[in-house]
Amino acid sequence: MSSTEPTTHPYRWAILFGVWLVYFSFGLTTVSMAPLVPHIVRDLGMSHAEMGFVLGGWQLVYIATAAPCGSVIDRWGPRAGLLLSALFIASSATLRANAVDFWTLLAAVGLFGVGGPMVSIGAPKLMSLWFKGPERGMAMGIYVTGPAMGGIISYSLTNSVLMPFFEQDWRSVLLLFSAVALICGAVWLAISAHPHARQIERELKAQPKERQLAVFAKLLAMPSVQVMLVMSVGIFFFNHGLNNWLPELLRHSGMSAAEAGIWAALPTAVGVAGALTIPRLATPARRMPILAGLFAAAGCAALLLLTEEPTAMTIGLIAQGIARSSMMTVMVLLLVEMKDVGSRYTGAASGLFFSAAEVGGVLGPLTLGAVYDVTGAFAPALVLLSSIMAGLVLLLLPLRRRLG
Image (cartoon, rainbow, N blue to C red):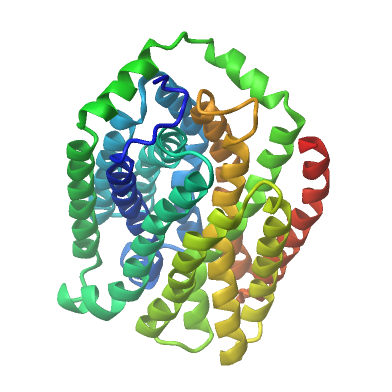
């Protein structure tokens, strides 16, 4: 079997579980500081703008490392990549727990940006190698529930269970998350040692290699890829901006820290169901209408959160969960199934895609924090988020034309 052709080996489900675990630790650590913002800001003497910069700090590193990581995974395979990802995630969480000021916390969070690309790029690469047809969309939807479940646990348990258990010591919470990442990495290492998985790795390494700059140039010359890169910025601006500030936003609407953490987990919980169904339904003929619906739901969610009326906010949180769980998955599925990309260039294409996306990942949390410092409210930022999603709906028109 050629490594460029997806396998139907039954072990693919074990591989999917291993990817899910590493992505779970990714989500757990990504969200880990959002419920802890009041404690960290107070203990380290930081402003909201500084905290917004820290929350988006790892995406700055991600922008620089995603494309090289994609090239490495295309050349050497995702097995080592996902293991390195787990190690970097664990190291980042440990260093966060030992931060003493803005700069040490920023450096610790930045380290996460080295490990993050390995899993977000390696996961679709593995799905392109192990799954095909409608199963591929289903598999991608399943592994996306990994970071969603990590986010649910972080949002819902941090202030209600873990902080009381550790006597309000946020550093101990982060050390616990570091241990979880190490365990997930060890399980992935064992699962990916299967002979069939090792054979795929050997075939990948034996493939003729192209100059990576030439591969990037080829991908960037595609008009459809250009539009998708722009759209990825808007998606991550929305997702990372709202995800990181949601507990604080809810707290300012009148909730306690524990209540805000639990309610902030609602979109992620709803998103699990969406991730298991929407990518599977996103066949080539349905992808554009589905993306339009997801962008519209995200825009409406931001407007509903403006009201601070319980029923409207609940509907908004549900809409946000449905949208954020599937927008990126459907876009990546669209990317990797383009005829000029395929399994061979999935790593490089995904690397470019996520490098661009993380520009939005940086600007989202930073912008929301800065807007709050200037205005003393989150309402202007929510209007901005809604406007961005409206723009993405409009961008689907040129994308449809370019995909032909």
